[in-house]
Image (cartoon, rainbow, N blue to C red; front, top):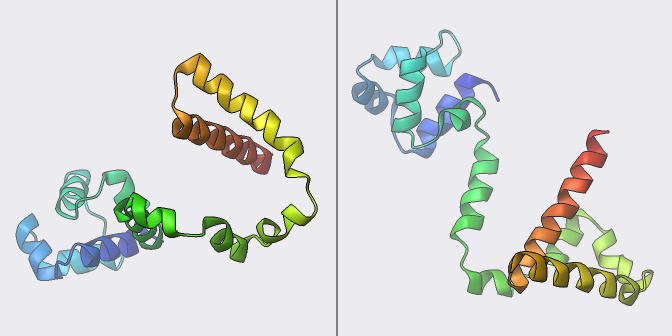
Length: 151
């Protein structure tokens, strides 16, 4: 997305018309339109005001992806109770089929003990509870994957 599209999406998501945004910012509706069409750019002060008006950070506004933001909002608003009802492995297996089939090929017990030791070490060394230790280990694995895919 470009800045104009980001501005348009953020304004729409905030439920404001071009007229509403223009009035609140002290500019004309045509100015809002030109920003959204990439004909002109808001200055840094106006960009900060836009971010505040649309309730996003300046970084989010300049690199805004409405789909990512919607997914983040849904996850944030989903209760723990609802999350427990979701078959996350089955859901992710639709995107990554290996998650549906690996248990038929991999002796999970071989890896379970090593992972349990890592979890216990995180708990002992840092005082983490079960869930926090699991999340830290998951994040470490994700970082390893990101480093590998960047290489």
